Length: 146
Image (tube, rainbow, N blue to C red; front, side):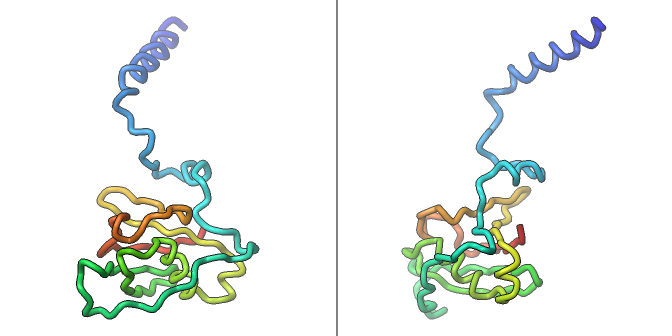
């Protein structure tokens, strides 16, 4: 019993010593972390209010003005598209929503994930950043069913 108490106190002491070095803002790769995080998609039964998708800039446009993305859909297709760097990242949801079949739209909701070396980053629809501010240029974004 004394050994068990000592082990618990030792673990607690270790956690207290390491707590200043723990990054609490970094997403965890566990299924429970997804349950705790805010929803990244709208429910399939909700009224979709994505912004209207603008016309795609020409691929020969100036790279300082255009942001190029590749989107991997749940069925395995990859689609590339250019966005203006000044446009809202919320247009990415409009683009992905337009590529998903209508039957799937009604049955499921999706979230967007950006792969980064050794981890992933969930993209949130509520983010009001532009493509230029987000750092998404030349990224692969995956559409994942929730």
